[in-house]
Figure 1 (cartoon, helix red, strand yellow):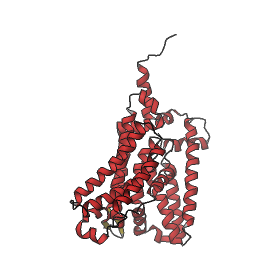
Figure 2: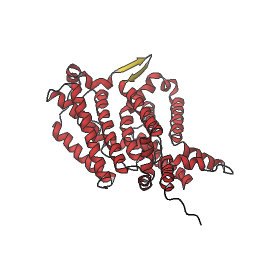
Figure 3: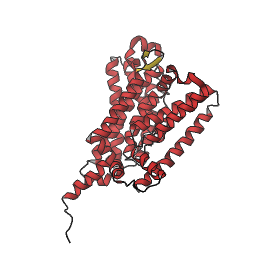
Figure 4: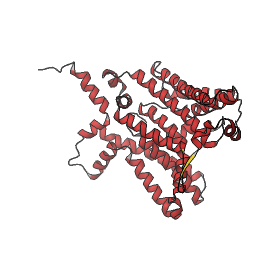
Length: 360
């Protein structure tokens, strides 16, 4: 009996890991399948399809209930403005969850970075541009520490980022002395800190630079995740880290790079947060970690790692924004928003489990 060539095994494994779910989908025989199974196969191959369908349906429903005013350019761009911060932080969360991890510290890193930008400008007198760079460096450093603890020390991401969340949150309040830097002072002395709050008007549509940055960031990360070796390695690590290691992927280095990039993106979100609220507040964005996870889950990205699209995260954030604004315009109790979002989260996880059976 002829034995398999051991030299060819790593390359075969490499091909299997890097292509991930797409290879399984390509080889999945759709002949003689029921319509439901074919639909299941379609959703498995297009993970952003479910949140896109839900987003379109929610827009139609609220459009019918509220009439033409809901489809006005001002209202639709207002939704984009409201989800800009969640979308940026959600992009950071997406990268981590694709590696089968989770980052509970994203919101705290975002706020600490914004506080550093403000304090370095007004307390130490640094040029605002230098202070922004210092804030970005702090965010990246926090993410790098998370990555080192997860990759090198093999600690669970949940525990590491939970601890980092508490440490960063406490450091934020201790360092800032719970002091808010007013928007008037920023506008007069350091307008660059409010850069992402400036807007671009096209008719009645109002696009802030924060919204434009969110869209460009998601587009860039989509390209990186789908068209570069680094992006394929991210999916490979999330799908099966042991197989990825055997295939030649440096899993530890990949994890460190993912968490570091996540921290940097959170710092950019902190800069955008200053533009959004106009001031530097140590109490702002306290629920950004939960909101980012909500956008990721509703967006169809698997919490088990290795499957999903960052476009789905954006759709998930927009779904939350549509429900929040739509229900507010209808005049319902705000608690209905949380109730419906909770239902969407549980439904999204159930659908993900159902879709994963295609690869089972």
